[in-house]
Amino acid sequence: MNIAFIGLGRMGWHIAAHLMRAGHSLSVYDVSSKLTADWAKAFAGRAGISVADTVIGAECVMTSLPADAALQSVWDMAQSTLAPGAIWVDHSTTSAEIAKRLATAARVQGRYFIDAPVSGGTIGAEKGTLAIMAGADEAACTVVEPLMTAYAQRASLIGPPGAGQLTKMSNQICVAGIGQALAEGLAFAEHHGLDPRKVLDVMLKGSSTSWMMENRAQTMIDGKFDFGFSTTLMRKDLGLVMEEAHRADVSLPVTALVAQLLSDVSAMGLASADWCSLMQRQRRAQSGD
Image (cartoon, rainbow, N blue to C red):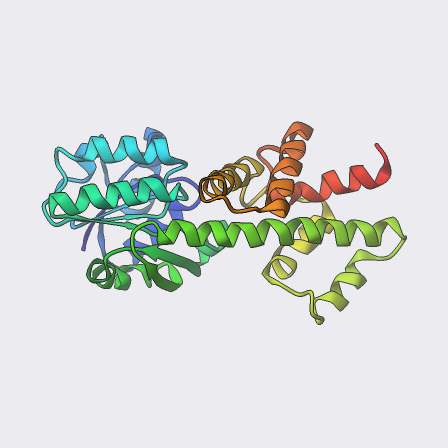
C-alpha cells in the first residue's frame, strides 16, 4: 500500500520502519528535515518536502504527532493534495474532541479518520509489539488492520471516533497510579534498609505484579531514566485526562495528585527523563530534603 507517514519521533520512526520492512511504499515527513532525510536514507523511502507533497497519492496517511495543535496543522496542510477515499490513521495521543471533529470532516469529504493511540512505549514501537486502541468506522478499520500487524501485537476497535483517545486516557489513568505506587513501595523498602531487588523479586511473583513492575521497577531502583516516555509527555497526557474529566464532571483524585507530583519532578530538572523518575521525587521526599 502507498502510505504517507508524518512524524518521525521516538515512536513514529520505528512504526514507519516496520511498515517499510513489511513491503509497503512509504513517503515520510517530519518538521525536522534532518530526521526526514535520515529516515529516508536508512530505509530507502521517499523523503517528502512538505506535508502536501508527502500525502500525494497516499491511500493511507499515518501521523504520530505531539498534540492537538500539531495534528490540526498537519491535517490542514494535507487537504489540498489528500486523495479521495484516503484513510487517515492517527497514532498521536490527543483530545477526544479533535478526533471526533476530524472524523466528521473526513466523512463529509468521502474520507476516513481513525484515532488510534498506542500503548507500549518506545520499546514496544521498536519491537513491533504495540497495543492499538482505535475509534473509527468499522469498514475503514478493517482495511488498515493488516497494516497494523507490522508494528502491533494487538489492534482493537473500541467504538466510534474518539473512543480510541478515551481508551488511551483510561490506560494512562491506570499507568500513572501504578507508577506512583511503585515509586512509593520501592522507596519505602529502601528507607527501611531492605534490598529493593529482593523485595522486587518477591513482588513480581505476588498479587502486586504488573507490566510496570516487570519493565520499569529495576530502572527505578537503579535511578536510570535516560530513555522511554518523558515526564513532559506524561504531564501532557494527564493534562488531557484532567480536561476530559472536568468536561464530563468525573472525579479523578489519584490522577490529579500524580499530575501534580510530575510537575515537582519536572521542577527537579527531570522534564526530559522517563516519567518513572517519580522515584527520585519519592526518594527526596522520604529523605526529608
